[in-house]
Length: 510
Image 1 (cartoon, one colour):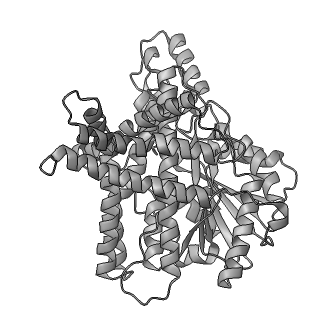
Image 2 (cartoon, helix red, strand yellow; image 1 turned 90 degrees about the vertical axis):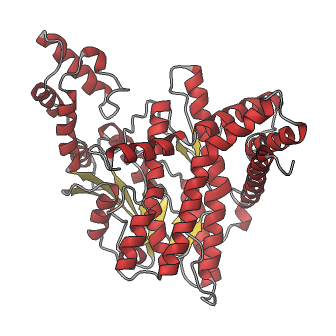
Image 3 (cartoon, helix red, strand yellow; image 1 turned 120 degrees about the horizontal axis):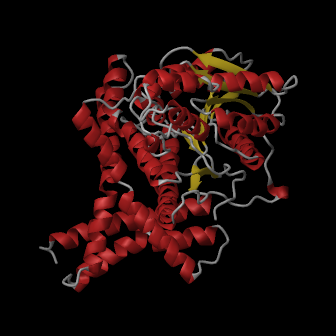
């Protein structure tokens, strides 16, 4: 076995997966633990300035307001800001140009995920009435102009609201930046009484943080103030992922459900443990040189003290995405990023096309580490060895993501191969068991569901399929970059075409 390459690869994958399983179990022992009413700590008064950047999300506005406004009434002094952008008008013109030459068969959600069903239906009706075989750009632009923009919808909805409490604002960003620029524009207009006691809270338009989540957040703030004498600088509300079975075929529903399982396990295996280690190291006295790790923040459910947000210059706008780059910037200043010991549930991709596009988009952050190092070293943030350490950690994480699918496929081949030697087969089987069956059973037990045999088998198979697909998006990102020479697109890489309602509680794991 010592001279068998296959055995060494299987052993390496098994070791990594077993170690990941250990982290999952430790996370489950720490997070989402029930708290009896008599044992609750004093709740910290919490002021949240919730900022929701929106783009092409006309159909989501009413539901978002109906959720967030009553939620924030329990937090005196809190505000809600919806940030629209002039970029939507430019993208609408670009979409009109892309529609030139489109036939009736082309007017589908798969071809144009940025358009709503009503917009596609109107374009199809116009095409049929024209008697032509295809659309032209001018006609497409005229049809699309008949639909309100997200800014129009926000303005109309706020005009219908009574005098709101909490304060609800509409900020219209007039630049061509993306999410980070929208959030920064909203924070620039915030008037805060105590910047170090108030938080900027970034959520997506389909986020549904519950009262339970905010109550646990307030308890956590009180706990940190009692231990440290001050409120934490940054708090990450980590998420589990769940689909709602919107796809029309069973295989697509199963594949997307498996990808959601795999992403949830990544949160428990990597995201939360990494943040906990980083926060502990960042709070220690600076007795040793070097970075305390590398914070990897996520743009959903991110709470940042207002003064820290302004101190670090807001979210980075020079990268393709902002969340991982923001964690890099916090790391240079050794700002602790605390993981909330309570997870929320967020909607996952419902279609394979959306899933791959999302995975490709998320991987862009790893490709931006070099740009972060160059930019911030030139501005005097961090020493050269700090950036070298951060780049090394980032490269390792990116390579680990790229190799998930090949490693899983290789181990699966060894298990099923008729000529595989028994020790190699056993090692490969251990690797697959530690990545699928064992974590699925651990998660079911933590959620109070007995890990039944059939359910475990189905969820394990779906998780395996999700792992086999996990590296496709990153590989596509690298390929597109190599072919086109750029990673930026004219259209913001998002569709937000939810065909089912967003989850409304934090306990919907089934």
